[in-house]
Picture (cartoon, rainbow, N blue to C red):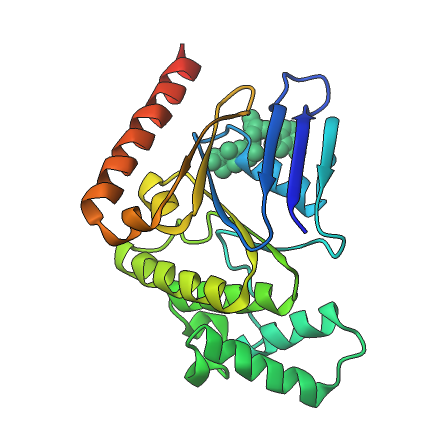
Length: 243
Ligand SMILES: Nc1ncnc2c1ncn2[C@@H]1O[C@H](COP(=O)(O)OP(=O)(O)OP(=O)(O)O)[C@@H](O)[C@H]1O
C-alpha cells in the first residue's frame, strides 16, 4: 500500500502553520529521502505519518498496520543486551510469539545488521554505529511495511555513516520495506533515496523533488552534480526563510 499525503497541514495551538499543503505519494517499496532546513517540519511530518501527531488539515493514507520508527538516538534499554532489546520489540509486536521463536528471529535480525557476534553485549559496550545497528534491527522487529527514519545516522562519524548507508541499502533491498528517511544532509539523501523531496521552511511544503537514477548511483560525477543542484536549491530555501 502506498503512503499518500494530501493537502496536509499542521499548526501547533494558534501558532503559525508548521506544515501547509503538503502533497506526496510514496509507492510501496520506495526509498524516499526527505530533505529540508533545520526546523522546517520534517520530524513533524514523520510523526504524522507514524500516527504520533494528528494533521490539522488534509488527509493521509498509511498502511493499516502503522509504521516502524527509528530515531537519531538509538534509545536502547541500557539494562538489556542487544538481543534483549530486539526480543522485547518482537514481543511487543506479537504478543502471541513464543520465547524460542523470538530468540530465533532476534538471531536472524542480528545477522541481518551484521551484529551476529554482539548479541550478548549491553548498549554501553557497543560503539555508536553498533548501537544504531541494534536500533535498526529493533525497528525491523516491528515488522511493518513502512519504516520511518528520523536522521538515524546524524550523530555518527563519516566512515561509520558510509558503512551504514551500504548496510541500509542492502537491508532495504532484502526486505522490500517502504522507507522515508529524514535528513538535512544532501549527500546522504542522494546516496540513499530513489527520490529526494525538498521541504520548504515556514510553512513546510514539498517545493521540489528529484529522481536519483541508476546513472547517479554508478557515476560519482553525476551524483556530485545532482548533490550540487540540490544543495543550491536547499540554500535558496534557507536564504528565503532567513529574510
Ligand atoms: N509539539 C510541538 N509543539 C509546538 N511546536 C512544535 C512541536 N513540535 C514541533 N514544533 C515546532 O514545529 C517546527 C518544526 O519542527 P520539526 O522538529 O518538525 O522540524 P525539523 O525539520 O525536524 O527540524 P530539525 O531538522 O532541526 O530536527 C519547529 O518550529 C518546532 O518548534
